[in-house]
View 1 (cartoon, rainbow, N blue to C red):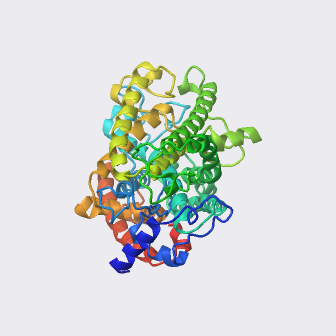
View 2: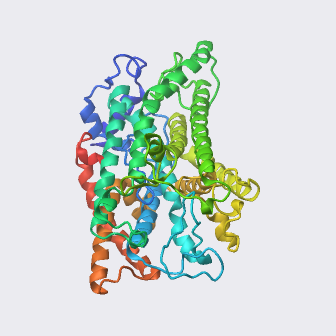
View 3: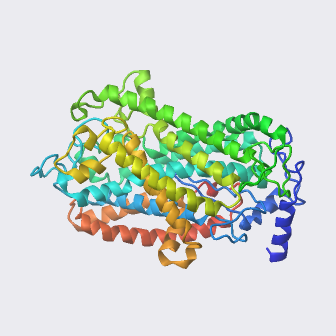
Length: 559
């Protein structure tokens, strides 16, 4: 595509009339820009295509939206010719790399002495009986911070990808309705199908456990074939259900709410300067009567729409987390260490396993560590953040300013909650007087299953600060490490599926070379992990090149 045709196309997009861009009308299926939709998609390099993923220890979703193309959009660097938000790719790539570390550790290492809960307790039992969940003896790693850090570093993965999934859903919707002529129903169907695919891919990934069950599973006596394939409904199930649940909210509910709420403001037609783009640039919200794409007028409805979205998402997330907290408290009793996760047998208990409270299933060798609604609460914040990006005229600058303050505020709130919140917002650790013989570990040892409020504050605070740092890098090609992360962040789902089979293959080789020893020292795992990243870099480079040649409707775009 020549530079002349590219600039001509951008001019066409920047002069669309309200008639051309009536995304929520009954004829919401075409964009009158003088070219076919398919050709437009093939030439969409100048727009910001974001691939979203989601994952923690097994967490991943990929979304390929193209950012809404408007003349007022600026990139991370402020260069209007390149509007891709690279900082999102870089954060996603870092999380994918950390996820790979966690899986290398689980499959390849068998370190000892990490199961104690008091000084001097160095029982040689591997992972043993202790837990990171809301019930049972809390894992304190015998006070060895290096073991705690090796595990805790991956805590940012699940909330990070859940958050990025919400951002990606908003941006994909905006892109497909503006650039591809999709209507709301088609976008909603896309999300539902994608969610189902994610759930099914979770079982494809778990098939790797049939090759080599990780030592942690052997220690917990769940290495039966059926349990390895179906035994953990983990992140992929949670993310798929979250995407299906969020689909009607993103495509129908939020546009309806914001349209009704801003109708009075639109009728007043009060024009005020604002850093926001005109609302016609965002098919998320029905274009206001006074807005035209080539108008320099800014209107307070943009601010109002953002506040409505944040309010709705915050209220929903708060309600979900409040219910989760109540259900966990009722099961913990006065001492979480003596509580246990009873097997679910009734319909109501099974429903809670998938929605709020993790635990075992009574009649089948299965365990759900990721009930989806608490993670969906984090996705809601991602949806609100993505809407803010869509409606802001300078997305890169908005990320730099908001993520720094927000990240520091969340970390400050975490410290307050852990020191002064008591049992409120914290399900395990320091506030419940658990493991205080190891103060630093006890303070940072938050409940992940299900995610407590303190866990969310800590991990999302770190994720937002990382996003802020990545937003200041500019183009990823500047640095060797950023090129690595950028590659992973652009094809994260392909990375996720393939890296499991790579790690299990390495595990088979190690066991054959060591005479069947089911693990290696943790320090050696670091070297293997770095090797895995190098191999995956080459695989992801080739897959990204292949993917770029496929049509926008290709099944390969799911990866």
